[in-house]
Image (cartoon, rainbow, N blue to C red; front, top):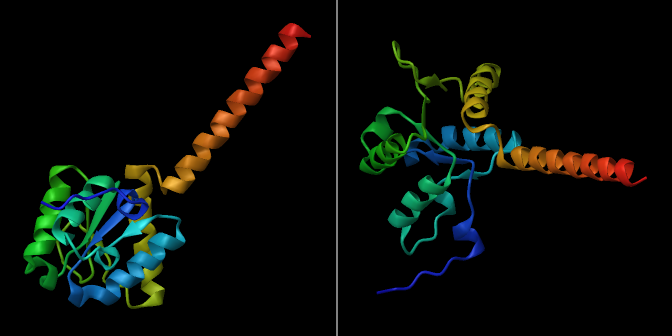
Length: 165
């Protein structure tokens, strides 16, 4: 039985895991680029280690704050995408995005992904949902925590100086 050791790559936590079917690669690329530009750490299967990719996908979903599933007819036919979405739904991390227009759904539209004039408004809605649900990119949350801790330390030091001075 192989022994897996944690290395920095595998132990990394991502803000967003993107689940998609290979036929939707162009839409995934546009989405990942926008998420990364907004400061999110993003995982998709292109970052997979090839030895135990099924287990690694599950682990990355568990470590990610949110899973964005690009639902399309191709994705709906993929057992892997359905399994990833089902797992993400079960742990309350699923955000469904549709790269093709689907009337009468409450899914986030992303049918304008190929058109720069339509794309931005749809990306802004996706980013807004991510911000509400996750609190924003982890780097932003870490910076806010560090700033708050720094402010508390300065305030505490000032209070001590006043009492002793």
